[in-house]
Image 1 (spheres, rainbow, N blue to C red):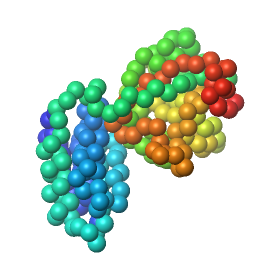
Image 2 (image 1 turned 135 degrees about the horizontal axis):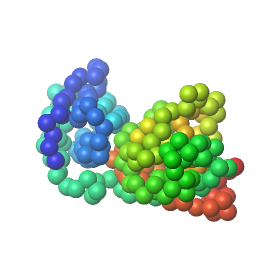
Image 3 (image 1 turned 180 degrees about the vertical axis):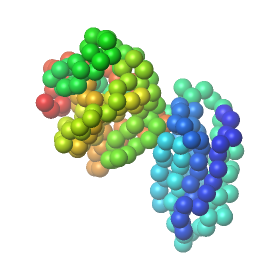
Length: 231
């Protein structure tokens, strides 16, 4: 795995940030996940938090236990140990069930018509891909997944909704995501997922992490309700 774009910068009095590249990709997501795991294993006792993003990893450490010189050295060791394993071997594969329908996905029909496809084709295409978790934000558990097949990529809505339901499966440009909680949102809604995407009482609190891979699997209305979904 080549690492020509990696650089380390000071991000604060007790934080450093690693930049892996300018453009999100499965390879970069894999590098970030590997680097985070190496740092947890080697200097986990002095870490306050690790914050992965599309092309970077923020490392926040306890300044009473270490300093940026020692952390920078640990980062360099972690980066030098990244493997060239196939991206498909990096990260867990997580399957998420989705109830695709006009009832659960109010934008499904419009997206299909805009793409010149049937709703069944949109559903099939959305399930065919294996998506990489590129980043988690803007809310806890909101995983940005890429990349969506260009045939069903769709721009954000001109007027965002004031409330998107928990579990809404959505598409915006070449990304897809599951809303972890009710919130405003401008993505195209194509279905609902009954799987909780964030539970502060659970361990781990989220079913996916940066670097993981996600596949969606269609379920029907009865299965959705049986799994705890709400309409």
